[in-house]
Length: 106
Image (cartoon, rainbow, N blue to C red; front, side, top):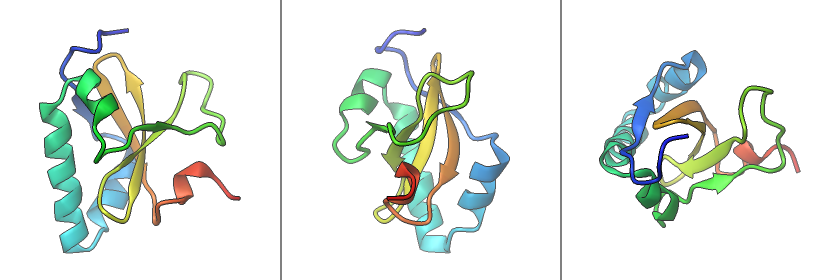
């Protein structure tokens, strides 16, 4: 796996993530794009520590076999995205409809 000082590279190719992003209302879509722009400027070390993004491992949902762990991060003030790290890439999976959705049903 790449080092923590490497710049974060974005993978936005997941069709579910794209659908979630493109169907957000304009103000939230712009906020999400601002967050993605911010992420591109960070190293992995900075992303892990960023208090605004709040990168957190999701332990309540089992990841697919080929993925070590799924994480959530704040993509807008009201929404969290799910993603995983693959080398230098952050592979974005979804944008949840509310802050608690990435963690599974309670």
